[in-house]
Structures are given as structure tokens and as C-alpha cells.
View 1: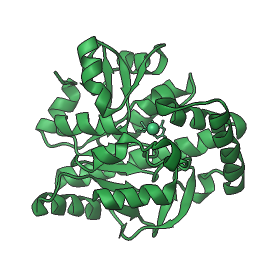
View 2: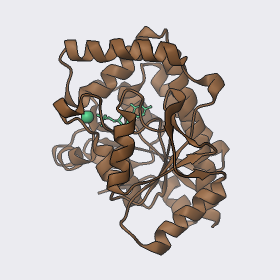
View 3: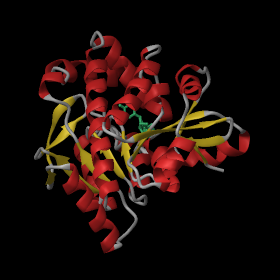
Length: 301
Ligand code: PSU
Ligand code: MN
């Protein structure tokens, strides 16, 4: 059922490095036409680190691991492309739907294909107002039961970051800062919260991955939280101000469920003159490059 591209299949068989990339950020997290350029650029960044990119999406009911250019174009430009969390996968498969995969669906499909390293922007998590809406991304629960290493710039800053960190602790998901003692804040280099562990090199990350396998505990993920460079972050004051407006607009317009995250990200892009987009892209680029190096360390291990 899983269509693994020839290039990805060959790389995996030869134990060469492969990096999984999600597609929701392309279809629903970035504006057109920039999104397609970014999709291609991220794949190229993985290649520059000597790894093979495996962008993941569902097309006409078939889950794909590794997309060609035409398929990437469909994800970026097709109207009506859905947003698929892991719970949506069987529905999309059975009904022949096409959709972009979130972190949860991407992690699941990557793990099934044997891809161990995955890069994204920011994870989903516990939303502010959780006590009213109970909105917690399915990313967290899935990462608690999937053996994959996710390189991200922390969790999206539109979320309740401390609550999300607490949920990750409760769920037993390992979290380490990469070359930082601070948990990154997606658009911001520092979320304002510390991390308990710091890893300093791709080799050290690969060693943790090996230890996860040797210890043979629950099949949970490793989150490598890699901050955007301070020079490339969104101005923290602008971030705080526009985010407050965005959360208000979200409530006023009655946006709920799957639509909340894309709404907030889009609001930030439009009301920061694109500065949030630049910070988002800088974060994702950094994560993709680091994931390439971690995949190389893992493959060589
Ligand atoms: N990171 C980004 N942009 C995004 C996302 C992550 O830089 O659009 C996506 C991921 O696919 C993540 C999803 O899994 O947002 C979370 O959506 P929700 O909060 O509805 O679970
Ligand atoms: Mn949600």
C-alpha cells in the first residue's frame, strides 16, 4: 500500500541516509507560490548534506514516501488537497483522497517505510485555551508511540508551550535541545523555557537513537529541538503583539479544529509583512540541514 520511491528504496536498502519531510507545511503552512519553491529548496538542502529527501503525502488514496517534481507540484498547488493527521490516513486511502500529511501522519508513514530521521518546522501541541477547546495536536500522542527522530524548532509558538512540554514529559517523549539549553520557540530562538538535555553533535544524537533501540522501552520518538539563529528570528515584541491579535481573530471568526493552526500561521504572515514567513523558513532550513547530518551519522553508525 505504501509507495516508496525508487530513490528512497535504494538508499534505504544500501543503508544510505534518508530524511523524511512533511507536506502539510507545503500545502497548508506556506503561501503559494512560495510553497513549491520551498518544497524544492528543502529537498535540495537535504541532498547537500549527502542524504536523500523523502517528502511524504497521500495522492489519490496512495501514501507516498518520496515524491517526484510533478507530485510535489500537486501537493503545493492542487485545490482541495486535504490536511491529514494519522487518524485520517485510512479514510484517505479507502476513499482515494489526496492530502498533505501533518507531523503525526508523516512520522507514522516514515517509520513504516523504515525512515528514522524526519525534519519539520515546529511540532503541533497543546493550544492555549485548551481547558475550553481540548485542542491538542495528534502529533504528541503519535510521537509517544513511534520510533522516529524529529528535528524541529520546538513547538509552534502559537501554542501553550509549557503545557506542551509537560504533555511530552507525561507521554514519555524524549526532548533534547541541539547546542542549546533553552527550548526553542519556533519563530523565536528561545521559547522562554529550559530543556533538561543538550546534544552537541549529529554523532551524539545518533548515539541516543542507538540507546533508545538498545534499551527497548516504549516505541517513542526523540525530539531534537534546533533553534532558529537569533539573527533570523522574528522580533519577539512583534511576535507577541501580532500573536495576541491572531488568537483574538481566531476566536472572533469561530475557527476550530484542523483549521486553527493554518489560520494562525497565515495571520502572522499577513500581519508581520512576511517577517514570520522568513523566520519560519529559516527555522525549517536549519532543521532540514541538521536532519541530513543526523541521518548521515545514523547511517554510518
Ligand atoms: N510546522 C510548520 N508549519 C506547519 C506545520 C508544522 O512550520 O504548517 C504543521 C505540521 O504538519 C503539524 C501541523 O503537524 O502543522 C499541526 O497541526 P494541528 O495543530 O492541527 O495538529
Ligand atoms: Mn488541533
